[in-house]
Length: 224
Ligand code: G3D
Ligand code: MG
Figure 1 (cartoon, protein in one colour):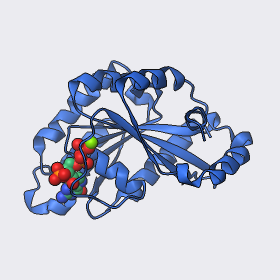
Figure 2: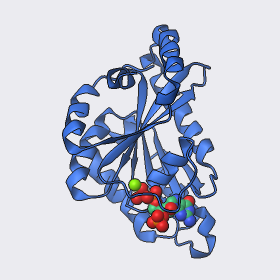
Figure 3: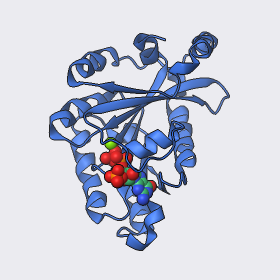
């Protein structure tokens, strides 16, 4: 499958939040990889492709963009948020700073997208570290309610609540954007996907140059 086809047949979702909150781990575990204690830090922006079934039983792919916090990449990465159909905000329940910063991230991307128009998912990650908890569950719920987003507490380490959170987001995206899903082409896509099993659930890294190319090619929102 060429990148062109990936672009045309996937649902773009962004993960945003402070570094070390577990964004890469969450996406990686959801994409079917084992949790790694030594995950290499995201340098610029990567994306993972994950094959899913939609609520209507049809197959589709999620394109999960994984952003790093470094300033140099952040501006390029955030420009791409405008093509997203879902945004995941991640904080670390052991870091009140990362929780407080979610509002700053929201302010930053609000320059690019109308967040009221995009399904949002708020994740408080690292619930396996209960003894170090620095953010109460109710605070996370309150924040998510304020922005009419979904809320879950997760552990990428223990693979806890990861699938359930993504499924809830997919359902919300499907309900909101189902008119944009091109089901006529779906059989075709399924056939292509089956011919390219090795292309599924893969990680793709972008440097800033090809990211700009991606940015222009991903402005279309034709889905599945
Ligand atoms: P980021 O992509 O948001 O920067 P990473 O975060 O996924 O790179 O994770 C940062 C660190 O937190 C990693 O540890 C990773 O193993 C750890 N981590 C991620 N999710 C969890 C979780 O649910 N529980 C616990 N206990 N740790 C988690 P290192 O040691 O590599 O820095
Ligand atoms: Mg990362």
